[in-house]
Image 1 (cartoon, rainbow, N blue to C red):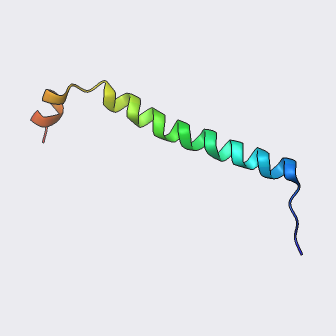
Image 2: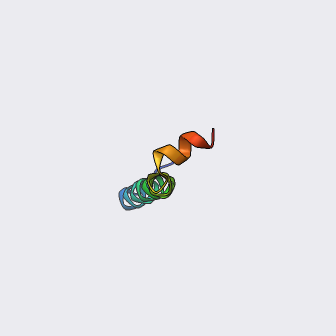
Length: 43
């Protein structure tokens, strides 16, 4: 039966949460800089 140390599980969870937040924040920040009129005009 494989077991995982509690500290390892917490560290892995925190790393996944931080990387997911960063992966969502970067495109959102980039999209927030685009003016809606310009975004619609490019379509």
